[in-house]
Length: 175
Image (cartoon, rainbow, N blue to C red; front, top):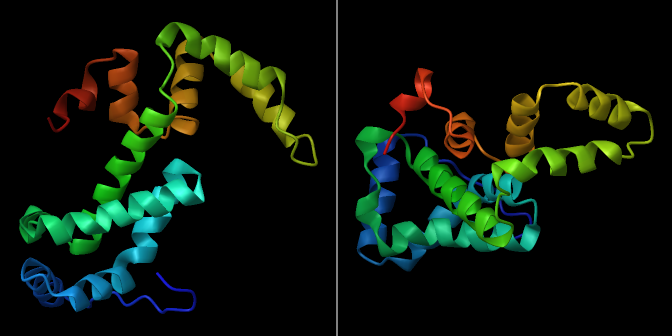
């Protein structure tokens, strides 16, 4: 997305469907309209997970190009075009982060978290050490979950899978 470009969000589903139909016909102006309308949302989601501007840009581009190459993947009965694109960006970002810096095995999570706690974040005040001390006092399973969520960018279902936890809502997850 170009600097200063105002993002336009289609106001209704018919505009989304029209945009996807144009993409299916390989209308390059539709691709630009898609980028203008949704690029900042997709990039924002990618950046939040990847925490690297260059990687987030690549992820956002890949996520938007999904509709260029496979417009049939968007199913309007499952949600809005914006939600679909943000979901694609989220999964691509998680995959990219995992490929760049694999999540450590469960046995090493506590050791890594302890290393993080021993060197509190320098925030200009004592909040970093207070948080580090609070996290250090948690039982190991809770520290591991916090580590996976904060540093791994995982949601509760992904954390449950990584930690081998079953039961509750985790069994309801999509395949």
